[in-house]
Amino acid sequence: MSHPDTRALRRHLNFFKQAGKRAPSDWPLEKNWKHLYTRQVKLNRARQLRIDYPTRSMRQRINEDYGDELAVYL
Image 1 (cartoon, helix red, strand yellow):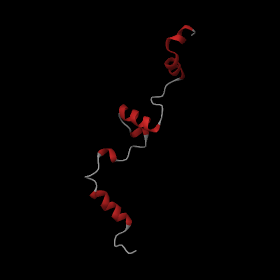
Image 2: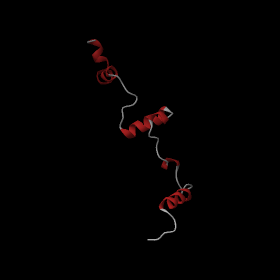
Image 3: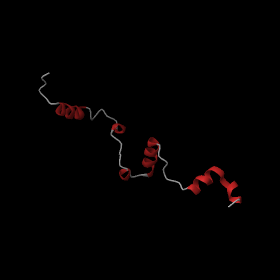
Image 4: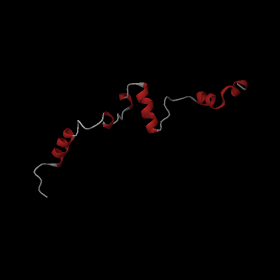
Protein backbone atom coordinates (compact mmCIF):
# COMPACT_ATOMS: atom_id res chain seq x y z
CA MET A 1 0.00 0.00 0.00
CA SER A 2 2.13 2.81 -1.23
CA HIS A 3 0.23 6.04 -1.60
CA PRO A 4 2.25 9.17 -2.30
CA ASP A 5 0.20 11.36 0.04
CA THR A 6 -0.38 10.90 3.70
CA ARG A 7 -3.88 10.33 4.99
CA ALA A 8 -3.85 13.73 6.68
CA LEU A 9 -3.02 15.49 3.42
CA ARG A 10 -5.72 13.59 1.51
CA ARG A 11 -8.31 14.51 4.14
CA HIS A 12 -7.19 18.15 4.12
CA LEU A 13 -7.45 18.41 0.33
CA ASN A 14 -10.78 16.57 0.28
CA PHE A 15 -12.18 18.98 2.85
CA PHE A 16 -11.45 21.96 0.61
CA LYS A 17 -12.72 20.20 -2.52
CA GLN A 18 -16.11 19.60 -0.91
CA ALA A 19 -16.35 22.93 0.91
CA GLY A 20 -18.55 24.46 -1.81
CA LYS A 21 -20.89 21.45 -1.79
CA ARG A 22 -21.65 21.59 1.92
CA ALA A 23 -24.69 23.28 3.32
CA PRO A 24 -24.12 25.61 6.28
CA SER A 25 -26.01 23.13 8.46
CA ASP A 26 -23.29 20.52 7.85
CA TRP A 27 -20.77 22.46 9.90
CA PRO A 28 -20.22 21.06 13.37
CA LEU A 29 -22.43 22.40 16.11
CA GLU A 30 -21.01 24.46 18.91
CA LYS A 31 -20.35 22.23 21.88
CA ASN A 32 -19.53 24.86 24.44
CA TRP A 33 -22.70 26.43 25.84
CA LYS A 34 -21.14 29.88 26.20
CA HIS A 35 -20.45 29.96 22.45
CA LEU A 36 -24.15 29.76 21.64
CA TYR A 37 -25.12 33.39 21.33
CA THR A 38 -28.81 33.78 20.58
CA ARG A 39 -31.68 32.44 22.63
CA GLN A 40 -33.16 30.57 19.66
CA VAL A 41 -29.89 28.75 19.03
CA LYS A 42 -29.70 27.76 22.69
CA LEU A 43 -33.31 26.51 22.65
CA ASN A 44 -32.66 24.40 19.55
CA ARG A 45 -29.43 22.96 20.96
CA ALA A 46 -31.07 22.23 24.30
CA ARG A 47 -33.85 20.38 22.49
CA GLN A 48 -31.27 18.27 20.64
CA LEU A 49 -29.45 17.47 23.87
CA ARG A 50 -32.73 16.92 25.75
CA ILE A 51 -31.80 19.58 28.31
CA ASP A 52 -34.45 21.55 30.13
CA TYR A 53 -33.63 25.12 29.08
CA PRO A 54 -34.23 27.70 30.37
CA THR A 55 -34.05 26.07 33.76
CA ARG A 56 -37.26 26.38 35.72
CA SER A 57 -37.52 26.46 39.46
CA MET A 58 -39.61 23.95 41.38
CA ARG A 59 -42.21 26.64 41.90
CA GLN A 60 -42.51 27.26 38.15
CA ARG A 61 -42.91 23.54 37.47
CA ILE A 62 -45.64 23.24 40.10
CA ASN A 63 -47.46 26.22 38.61
CA GLU A 64 -47.28 24.63 35.15
CA ASP A 65 -48.68 21.35 36.44
CA TYR A 66 -51.41 22.62 38.73
CA GLY A 67 -51.99 26.20 37.62
CA ASP A 68 -54.45 28.19 39.72
CA GLU A 69 -55.69 25.15 41.65
CA LEU A 70 -52.66 25.33 43.93
CA ALA A 71 -53.06 29.05 44.62
CA VAL A 72 -56.00 28.27 46.90
CA TYR A 73 -53.82 26.13 49.17
CA LEU A 74 -50.84 28.45 49.36
